Image (cartoon, rainbow, N blue to C red; front, side, top):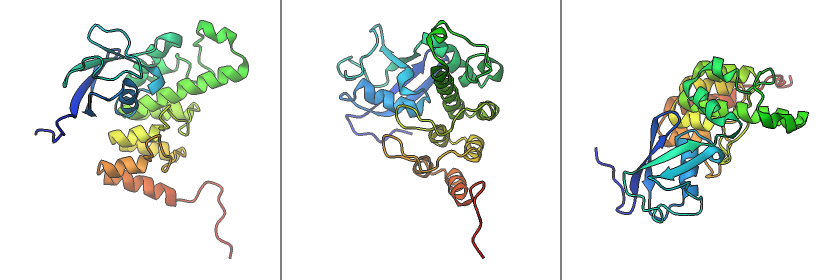
Length: 237
């Protein structure tokens, strides 16, 4: 079925080199900046914007403020998406994409993890806990995007926050809703995921489910907001 796109709008394919996954971005145009493409991939590929490195053909890293036209990107071309390699982010992303709990447990997503990169020696206790929380969130974000229910459950039990956000203001519930992973949505809701949290584009997880016509997921999120909060008092009699 042909895509009904305006003449100046085209489709780009983006290959996540570390995992071999291919993603499609349908509303690209020549004046789109690399930054804008990254913003879309934050949701479409489930990789937080700050971990993304983009390349095209034999060019070096594409700078955020350059446009697709500047790099002679052609419709249907393939852009390579890489993950920053410092602090073991590549290994963490791969483990989260696979939903491999045994690997995740060894990669610094909880305070009892044996993972200790060289940079950790320069962090104080407060900074170390923040570092752990960031890694746990990224793992939860990616696992939720890929629909790995057991990994999501593990990460939540280990303290990963479903309230944290990507640089685009997106929570794990945003990406689970985008991909239609109902079980992950349910788990995140049980742990207090915010249904009406707006991302940088003004979209809530419920908005995303509505836009994609995922009525079951939309209803699940709506119903979660009608339930009494733990510890809430009932009406006075």
